[in-house]
Amino acid sequence: MKDGLVKTLQELISIESDLHSDLQKIIGYAADRLSSIGMDVSVLNSDTFPVLTASYGTGGILFSGHLDTVPIGSGWSVAQADVVDNRIYGRGSADMKSGCAAIIECAEHLIAEKIPFSICFTTDEEEQMYGAELLAKSEMVKNAPAIIICEPTSVKLVHTEKGFFRFNLVTKGTSAHASQPWLGRDAILKMHYCIDRMLDLVETSSQKKTGMTMCITTIHGGDKNNVVTDTCTVEIDARYEPPATYHDVQDLIINRLRGESYEMTSELILDAFESDMNDPLAKEIIKFLNSDAVDMPYVTEAPYFAKINPHVFICGPGDPQLAHVVDEFVEINELEKTYDLLIHAAEFTSVQRKNKK
Image (cartoon, rainbow, N blue to C red; front, side, top):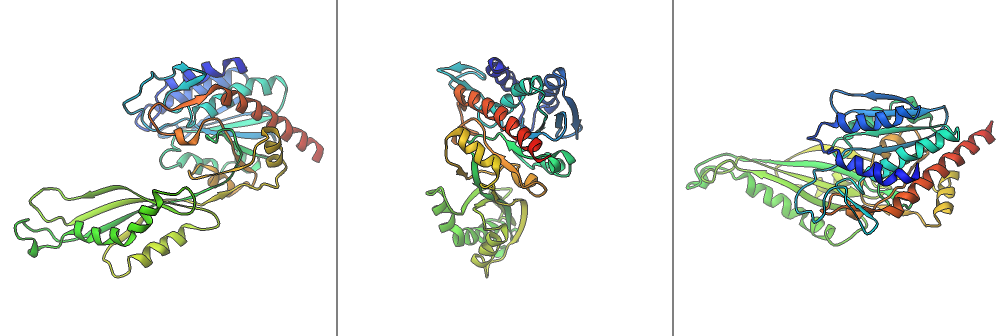
C-alpha cells in the first residue's frame, strides 16, 4: 500500500542493477512481490536481460518501467537508499526505480478494487532496449487500452521526447614510425578534419535545450606513442525533435563531411515520440495533475511501444536532470503523487472500457 512506497524504493535501490550486475536479483524481487499478491507473472529472456510481465484480469491499463540503472559511480555524499529531508537518495531513485516502486505498490490496491491492469519491467533500457523490442511484439502491449511509462518527468505528462541517433565515424590511415610521419597517413588527423566540419553543431548543442543536439561521447585512436595511427573512431550522440527523423540528421552529417574520407555506421536509432494530447486519458492526466504537458530531451522505450499502440504516455516521479548524476534523489511527495496518478489512470481506463461495451 501507499505507506510502503519508501520501503519498496529503498529495497529496489539496495539491489544493484547496472548492466554488469546480476539482473536476475532485481527481476526476482519484483516477480516475488507481484506474484505474492495474486498477479500472473512471467519472466522472459531470462538468460540475458530479463523482462518481467505481470497481469491481473484482462483489458486493463499497462504500467511500464525499467529496473536497470547506470553504475553507481563515486563521490556520493549520502549512502544508497538514505532518506534525508523527504528525499530518497540512491542510484535509480529518479531514473527510474521510483516509478517502478509506485507501480509495484499500487498493484495491491488495484487488485483489492478488482481493477484489471498489467505491468512490464525491462532491464536493458539504459543501453540497447532489447527488452522493449521484445515486448513490442507482445499482445500485452498491442492490446492495452493505454500504456503509462513511469520515467522521471517531475510527475508531468510528456508531450514529446527527442529521437535518438547514435553513430560512429571511422577514419582510416596508414601506420608508420612517428619519426617519419610522411611515410604514413594519420587517421587522427583525418578525424580532426571531420570533427572540424561539425564543430559548430557540437558547440551550439552545449548551450541550448531545444532543437537538435549533438555530442561527441567517445573517441579512440592509436595504440602506441611512436606510431602513426591507422584507425580512429568517434561515437556521436544526436538528438532531434519531431517531426524530424534520423535520416534528416544523417543527411546533415553527410553533407557536412562531403569531400572527407570516413566510414559511418549506425549504433542505435530511436524515432522521436509524440503523445496524442487529444486522447481522453491524456486530457484526464493533465486535469488530475493540474499541470501542462512538457517536452523531454531524453529517449525512453515509448517509440517501440508506439509502433503498435498509439495510446502511450510518459509520466513519473523524479527530476529528469537528476538522472545519472551523483547524489541522485527523488522527492517522496512525487513518489506519492505518482502512486495516486497510476490508480486514478487505471480506474479511469477501466470505466472508459466499460462504457464502450
